Structure formats: structure tokens, C-alpha cells
Length: 519
Image 1 (tube, one colour):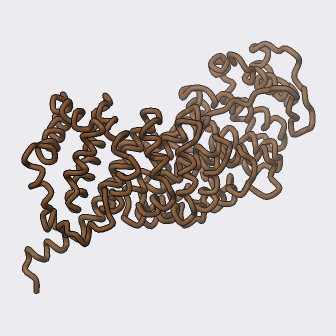
Image 2: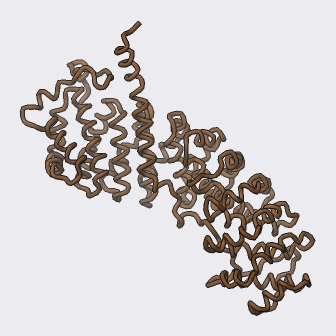
Image 3: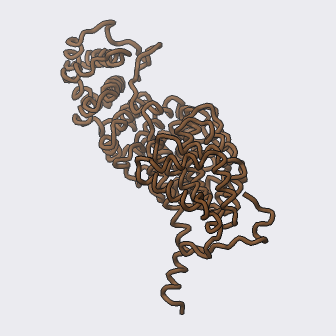
């Protein structure tokens, strides 16, 4: 039986490697949280149903029941009438007023009490035209501010709109879908009200092969809003039921449907590994990876976000993306004309290089080093920062040979240039990467040569400047690096690698292990 100390030593050796990369992935997730938030300009949370061009037909087939111009007083009086024809004319006039492109009088209509009246009309199951107009008016009220949306919720619209998802009139059902999408887009509380009224199974049932493209678009957009928001996230046991349908939707050709299906998947993968696993098991990965080749930025952006979220997971989940051919697409995306795509591709790769040696080797085999170094050299700063993370994560978990390839491809020049940036956190990332490279060189007895290479590209000068940096973490690392690897008289000593470091076996440089291998 081994001594406790030896046993602890072995456990540490076995544990440290895996722990290091799981931690690196978590760190990447935390630092890049802004990348994982869908910005408002990327996907609309709410949409007003505007009357543009040809007037949509009501379920009765009539197109213009209301007079050409009706005052708000006339609308309110008409909606209060007991005559259903007058009710319908007034509600249509109300809907048209709320569908004006500029300055719809939402607050005025709310103050005049049209919301509870429209909610009442949703119950008129014998009059689909009135339900349709009322649902449309409520859709546009709910497209407004949080306060305006809350008025719709407060008056009990959600359960009635959910019931209309079963309407025999496709127009009524579609308008109910749209209204629920706007309510769900208001935020987590409103979203959970909609989910709590069992909207999800009814929405999923509406997506059939013969469902029109425009109707399917509305359903999928509403689905994406029901999967959206993180604080708190939606109940996963409910939203995961959408996964088989989302998998089918990725086979559609319509770019609007594809985009919203990918957004939904990006929200579902933005969480813990068990959520990522449910998405992986749904079978979406091959189709999702194929969409990384899309020429439509509206589709590519959420597809890349979802893939990036998946590789923040465990090694098996990352392998699913690699096996589906994700790396080849990511290499091309590093050269995309849109800087946001380049940034997110670099972020995604940084989570893969935080993985194990085999995964890093796949990154090398896919030829990603050269475009990554190019981003490091000439990308915009946000992309450079992500590329720096990709390099440092690789230097943390890669083999000595893998680090040597990185150096041979010319990483030191652009990497050292980033020591001059104002963002001190990025400087720390680069310092850590350089320390890892020098430590790897030390194992091969090449530390003096690599130190000279860093000095020749101006790295030492930049390190000396950093000794006076205002951030303690930066100057301490810079001082320690200079003392360890660049001080006169210390270089010879530094080339002698210890036999063990933190419980992990190392090797002393010898003729045999250096032969044919150079930094």
C-alpha cells in the first residue's frame, strides 16, 4: 500500500490536467459573457404587426370593415357597443390605429380602456373576425414598453391567447402566436407566465409540413423568445421539449426560420453542461455545424453562438463539434469580412484550445494556427483579445511539441505586441502565455534560445516597461519573468528543468529528445 503522501501525489498528477482545462473553459465563459448575450439589434425581442401594402384579410374574408377615418372616441364607443358588427368595425379601426408605423397611440388607447375590452373579445369563439382584430390590437400593445405589455398580462390575456392557438382559423391562431411572442419577449417574468400557461406544446403542434412559411416564421420566433433570457433561465424541462422540432427546423431552407431556430439553440446551450448535453443528444450538431458555412450573416451569427456555447462544455461535447467538421468552418470564419464573426470564431476556438492535447492537435491539423496568428497580428482589438486567449489556453494544456509548432509559425511577434495594449487583463493573458512557452522551452533545454527570440522581437523591452505598470498583477509577473528567464547569469541555471513540477512528470533535456525538434 503506497504511503499517503505518494498516493496524494498520484491523485494530484491524474487530476490536475483535467481540472486545469475545465477551469480554463469556465474562465472563458465568464470573461466572454458579453459575447453570449444576444444583442437587441441581432434578434428583435418584440415586433409590431404593421399594415403595410395590401390590407390582410380578416378570417371572414372581408378586408375593410371600418370607416376610412375613425376618431379614438368613436372607436371606444363602438367597442363598448352591444352590436357585434359595430364592435368589429371599431376593433378593426383600433387595430389599424395601433398599426401605424409612426407614433401609434398605445398609451392613449390603454387609458381609454381598450385592453380589457380586446381581452373580452378573445372569448368570442363564434366570431373569428372579432377575435382576430382583438388579438392583433393586443399584439401591438404588447410590442411596446414593459409597462404597456404588463397591462395586457394584467387583464388576463395570456390564457385566452394560448387557447386561441387551437383556433380553427389559421389567421386567429397566427395572431395569437405573435401576441404571445411579444409578451414572452418582454423578459423572464412575462416569458414564464406564457410557459406556465402550457403554450409550448400547442406551439410545437402548430409546426407541420403544410404550415405556411409566414406562420412558421412567427411560431419559431415566439419559440426563440420562450427559450431566451438567463436571469433566471426558463424552466429547462419545458423548453427542452422544443429540441426535436428545432432539429427538424434546421433542415428548412428559409433563412428567417433558420435564424430563429439557431437563436433558440444558442439560448438553450447557454448554460450548464447538462443543458448542453440535451442539445447534443437531440441530434442538431451536424446541421448546426453545416450552418457555419452559411453566407447569410443572420443565420451564421446565431449558429456560431450556439456552437461556441457547446464547446464551453466538457470534452465529449467539444468532440461532437470537432467530429462534425466544425474546425474547418471556424478556420474560414477567422477570415470573415465581419469583425463580430471573427471575434466569435476566435472565442469558440479559445474554448477548444482549453481542452485536451488531442483536441489541440485537431486544431493544429485543421490548419487553424496560421489564421489565428493573422487575427492576433491584424484583427480588431476584440478579436485579438480572443485570439490571445486561444493561444494562452493552448500553451497551458498543449504538449511541448505543440507549443514549438506555435512558435515556429511566428506567434511571438504579434503576441508580444499585445503587451503594449491598455487593457491590463489582456496583458496578463499574454504574460501567462509567454511564461508557458518559456517553461516548455525549459523542458527541452531551449529556454535561452526562446528568450533571445522574445528579446529580438521587442518582448524584453516591453516586459521592462511593464515592471512599472500600475496593476500589481502585471508588474509582478513581468518582474518574475525577467528575473527567471532574462537576468544575466541566471540563464544557464534556468535551462535545467526540474524532474517534477506540481506533481507532473517532466523530463530533462537530452540529445535524444531534442534531435529533430527545435523551437
